[in-house]
Length: 516
Image (cartoon, rainbow, N blue to C red; front, side):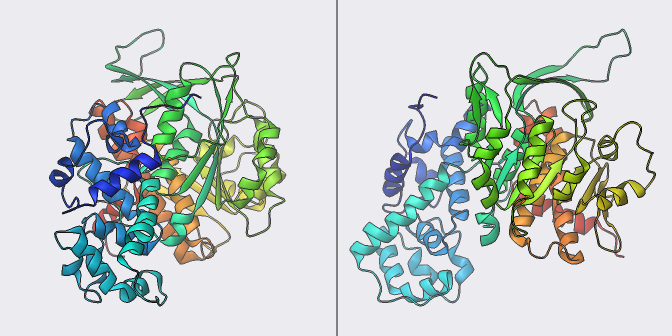
């Protein structure tokens, strides 16, 4: 692909940040507005461009200020985060260290005064943020040319991958260090979704009038990758797309969301992308028909990605890819050590009717996520019917570590624990059978795996992880319904929640949960 000249580069963003730190810094959107260059790199940050494409009327300075604050919150080096917060005069992270530090000098009205305060309190700032003792305070030149430069360079990197999620919501606080470092690879499909919004499904041999039409990138692999990136995970998508008129839009949306596209395979014009025709009701239910494209992954693509797959924390896989790709992937994971990545598999919508996954490979699946009917389609039509919990127990007997069952009021998880975990609360969770809610669940589960992977086999942390993932699923479903009704051009992508919104939903659920 040719390089786009209208995109912000790291060097350009870093130069802009050095300008923004001067004087009073940018404590408010108004103070930032006075320093902005029209059409400059800050106006072309991916998150800001995404707002423009969606037709947002939000003031540009407000949007840029918000994305800077979110990016600072996502910085992985705590000292650099505090330095960026101080020199830019954002003042969002200083209060957390009070009274151990003197906050007032660090919020002085001039950059020279703020730098002097950093040098005066260097030892305590270093100890509080990094947990180690510091040597002598840096000189003014060292602080300006080395420490600030390094901190702002890290911030510039974050600004180029930060995805700005709806206004009016709280700003994300940093996640745990483990979760922020979490690496996820999604192995799945990308499709162009053609969505008709209707009041009701037409009767046989009749038609109905659609109220709107959307054509947007989609597919389980695409959506799960964006969902994971939205939660702050280092996410890459291993998928195949065709070099057609939809290619740029697909890549652009992934990159704007912070998804690494270096594993995305683009095949030549002789191939086609997949399409999904979706008939979506105003209440959220939907039906779909799929047209499989000819752009596909091959076993060689899995082999080539093996070193990165082995090094990640979690693999999210879907049945959108050909059966041989799923087989190749699970066979590969069988060679990884026990400390290798957790495998989360979504078996919905089998690629080819009648082609079933080798049952022996189910032993490589750590989390099987789906609806009951999808689990039954893992087996041949002649397989004896398994009633009730017998189906989930049978899957466990085949080697699946955890069976995660989705339903209209939450989720249930079957595992080696004596009793299943039921996060099913009709008073708190009610959402339709939508693919977007499951994609959010899988991404949220991956986040918790990256955060607490060593203990999820115990009942209490597993329960908390499933509760958190179910809250993400519910939040995505409610946001999707609201976004679609409001005429959002990309309701699925824009409904995927950040960590802050998941926590907000979880707090609301806890308030509504009757005491046991």
